[in-house]
Length: 177
Image 1 (cartoon, rainbow, N blue to C red):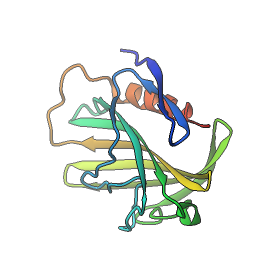
Image 2 (cartoon, rainbow, N blue to C red):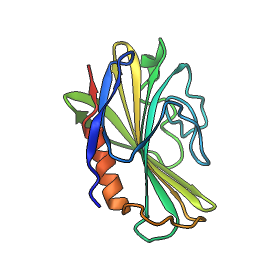
Image 3 (cartoon, one colour):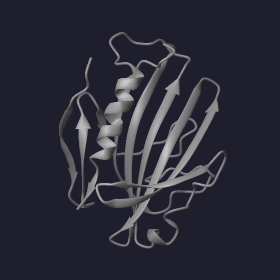
Image 4 (spheres, one colour):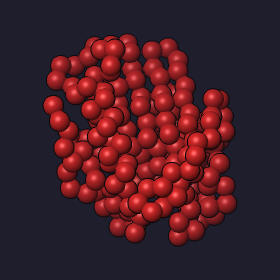
């Protein structure tokens, strides 16, 4: 099964576009899950996201490499409200096992990058958190792998490696305009 890309998702008010993989589900609300804070930017230290806008979450459900349970490969995007640029590159990121990564460039825009993860009971989350300031606002993008092991693996799911590669391609297509 090869996951192909579809037409772009466009958020005119937030000045961004991103290509989506076939089969990805979309949500305009960045709700929380176990181990995962709700809000327009992920927070790993217990702090609130602060004022901002949920833009979108794109999810591909996949079969984990070990074949147990499910894993959601996710890209989510949020934009902060006025004043969010002040602490954009660090807010909520320096908790738990946080690791500052080298900055990344996506389509000519430089993003601060952090790695974070957590696990508990039958769930685990691994995320790369990306932040940039543009138009005097904080743009927060998270590339997440969220695994649930205490569940049956539905038939027909793509392998995790393919879903992850498709979401990585989607992230690489992100453009702020």
